[in-house]
Image 1 (cartoon, rainbow, N blue to C red):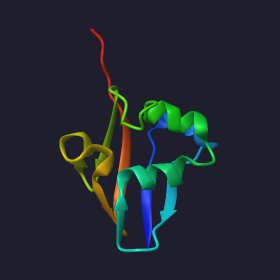
Image 2 (image 1 turned 90 degrees about the vertical axis):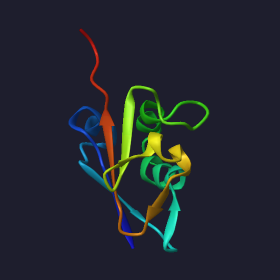
Image 3 (image 1 turned 90 degrees about the horizontal axis):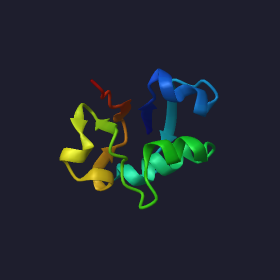
Image 4 (image 1 turned 45 degrees about the vertical axis):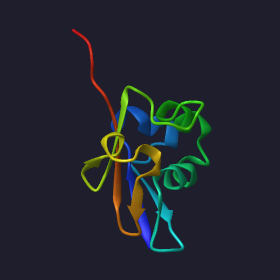
Length: 95
């Protein structure tokens, strides 16, 4: 089954312009960390923009799994189903 990782316009240049990154899961589910590792494997710069050196989601990045905020769930341990959609969204801040 295929998980869809959807990127915002600001990050697409780091993935050769791709709006979506398909990730094949062998089993029925996997932790978000595994899905992001597989999705970003060809693009290490993109991986560093989304996750910090500890592998956690960066403070100014939001990741949603099927509409649920991963940071409010179990972070990178959030379970991702085999047909889930993961949205990566840059947080907007300023004044």
